[in-house]
Amino acid sequence: MNVFPDFDSLGGIGDLKTAIGAMLTIILIVAVLMLIICAIIWAIASSTGNPGLSSKGRTGVLVAVGAAALAGAGVAWINWLIGVGGQL
Image 1: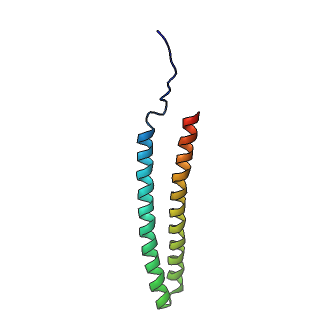
Image 2: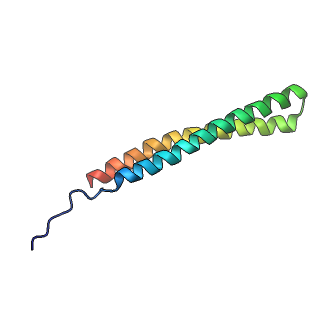
Image 3: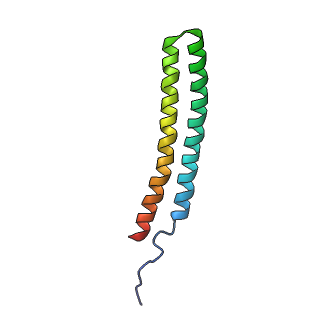
């Protein structure tokens, strides 16, 4: 009986890519919806002169932009990690 190395050691990587892609897609959709809602709240609060709610709307917009940027960077990071894992 011969023992050979497993050259296809990353066999389930396609399923992992699919799961991560779906998760990051959901994150981006939620971030865009949050951006739209917070921008509307910020605009209405600014026009009515409510500084507290305007500040919360602005913070929500900045958090949504940050979440979208991190999700985009997450895609690049995961692809890099999968590439490095394939070389090991």
